[in-house]
Every structure is written in structure tokens, then in C-alpha cells.
Length: 364
Image (tube, rainbow, N blue to C red; front, top):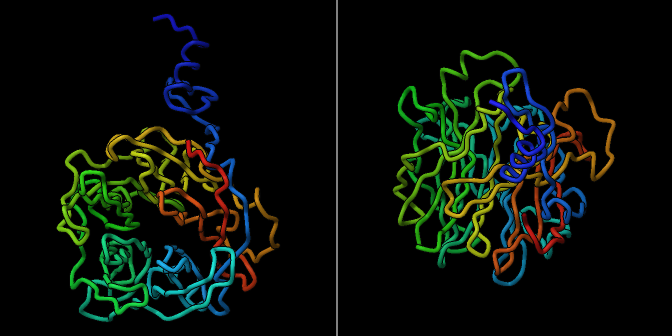
């Protein structure tokens, strides 16, 4: 078969929204540079937030209150536990500020590990706050043994952002059957309401056998699934065609995590952290007409070193330069106004939130 290389590459880039840089000897396209989105071009770095002495801070999920105050639900764990303490000692904490770029005041711990006998016995992590009707829903991940294989998604609800919060007795989404792509865990929840009043829960997981068999710093291949319910509390039923996003065919164990999903003007958007599609320091942006079939990614944000020069930091901080757990503060029109992420470093050589202003009125 004869190929016109120029036409082929042009068509490929138009179809995928990417710049294809070269092909391997197997004929497999290797994408080295993503197209930068309008969203990425409009990001303005403001600074760090929630720098707490004696703690690592992660997973900052913001929401506007009716009075315009900004409430944020974030994860923290004691510094002596090290970076890995998120898995065996994290709690979810509530803080407020008059504006996203103003100092946050810590109010209280809202979810702490409940101890032996509970599904969230050893950690509470990955908070994702949202409001449906007159109730606030705080989705999160817990585990019961301090390891990844008991990570499950749960839920706490309240009529006010100040609580009190009532959590579910059991997870709202279990891992898949042994051998399935999602048999290891359910984690990184993000939930939206669609135009037809269905509730879509997007979650991350991977296969246990792959995870145990592989060697190296990154084991397993993280994919995203969808579960659907008629109520924000569930029961959630997994979509039959899961996973809805799987980058493993790109080679090099390409994958992603930390997705945040929103709908703007009828279009589904997802922002997430790259894990090898282009690099491990950038962000990915995808879009969809239905939340089930997703586009190839564009660049959502760049490495932290693009926006600010910090450090030097101790060698123990091995994730310096990455912006992880990207989450958006949306306005009343469901448009992004502020981007919050988590990054190692900061005043106490631990980790804290990073805040960006979203200045573009375009996303893609």
C-alpha cells in the first residue's frame, strides 16, 4: 500500500487535535507535542494557598457559597508521615476565603478516618464538592487497610457547607470483578448532572494483575470509567462500554489521573493530569458530546516551572514541578473562573495548593 506521508500526517493531526512528531518502526504514531488549548493559554498563575505548617496539603476542591464566599475542601496529613501519608492518614478539611486569591482560614476537619470496621478506616482523601438542588455532596475516597486495593468511593451530604456531614455506611461504587480492568479500586471521583437529569460519576481504576506483575515507579495502567444513577446518592450502575478513556494503546504505559469533569454549553469537558501521553508534568483537556466518547487530548496546563520558579527543594520531594489534582471553581454559568491544583514544595517543603486565574472565554 502506498501512503502520502504529508496528507496522512495532516489528516491525523486534524482528527486527533495533536501534532504527530514521528512514527515507530511498527508504524505506531508517537505523539510528542499536544496542541495547546485556549484554556491553557489563558491561565494566569496567582500563587500558593493553604500552606500549613506540619502538614502536606492536597486535593483542593472549591465551591462558591450563596454569599459569594469561597469554600474549599482539601486533604491533609501530618508531615511526619511523608508524601505517602495520603494513603494511611489523610483527613478532609474545610476552609473559607473572601475570594479565591485571598488567604484561606481553616475551619474544621469534616471527614477523618473512622477506624477499624469501617470502609474508610485508614484514610479520607480525594474530596470533590458539588451541589445538587439544595444539598451539598462531598464525594471522596477512603480505604480500610492503608493500601490501594481497598480504595473505594464514598459520599457525605449536608444541607450547609458548614455541615453537619452525614456519610454513607458503605462505598457508593465498588471495584469490578476479579480480572476486570477496574478490579483494583475505585478512586478520583467527579460527579455531574446531565441535561436529562442523570448523574454521571467518573472514576479511576486499574487492573490488579497488571499492577502486581509490572516493575518500576509506575505500575498498572490507570483508566477512567463511568457510572450512572438517577440520584446523586446512587445507586450507580457502571456503563457497559467502560473504560470510557484508555490511553494504553499509545504505548509507553501512557495513562492519566485526577480528572475533573464539567458541562459548559452542552459540551462535556475533562481536565486531568498527564501520566505519559506527552509528559508527567503537564495537564490534559478532553471534550465529549455525551460523556462516553471522548476526544483525543489537548494541553490543559504546563509544568509548574513554566509559571513560577521555586526552590531549590530537598531531594525527598520527587514530584516538584507537577501540578496534580486539578479542580475548577465554576461560575453560575458553569464556566471556569479559577483553577486549583496541588504541588510539592512551598514554604514548609511539603505540598500545598496552587491557584490560577482562568482568563480565556474559550476552552478548546
